[in-house]
Amino acid sequence: MKLKHTLLAAALIGANALFFAAPASAADNCKAEITGNDLMQYDKKEMKFDASCTTIEITLKHIGKLAKEAMGHNWVLTNTADAMAVANDGLAAGLAANYIKAGDKRVIAHTKVLGGGESDTIKIPASSLKKGGDYSYECTFPGHSALMKGKLIFG
Ligand code: CU
Image (cartoon, rainbow, N blue to C red; front, side, top):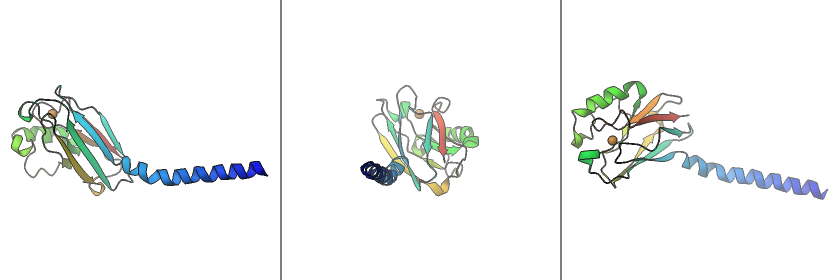
């Protein structure tokens, strides 16, 4: 009888822990940070978000020291099929335009181009993404997208 009560209590505590933990972890899963450095590298090849996220928050941090004119980094999200063309078209746009062609509809979201020590946070509404879509992020600073790219997984 006593054992039965103990088990029941343990089960209830377990259920409560799950209940209270779920909302917090769901929110954390909708935010992510990615860094860029002076060696032309992101620290992540993949960023994964749950389809239950209503908004995805991305923070790009440039952890290097070089100026954005020399080693600028941004984070640009597109469908994977568009990634190369978006980077190519961004070349001519220049730094002031964050190396993104004006009005480029293929760009789902993007940060500013950052220099060493800077950071930028953007929010992407989940309504602009499809569950299971094939998304890539890249840096469109000239010459960087060959190395600085990764997959964004939603759902
Ligand atoms: Cu870059």
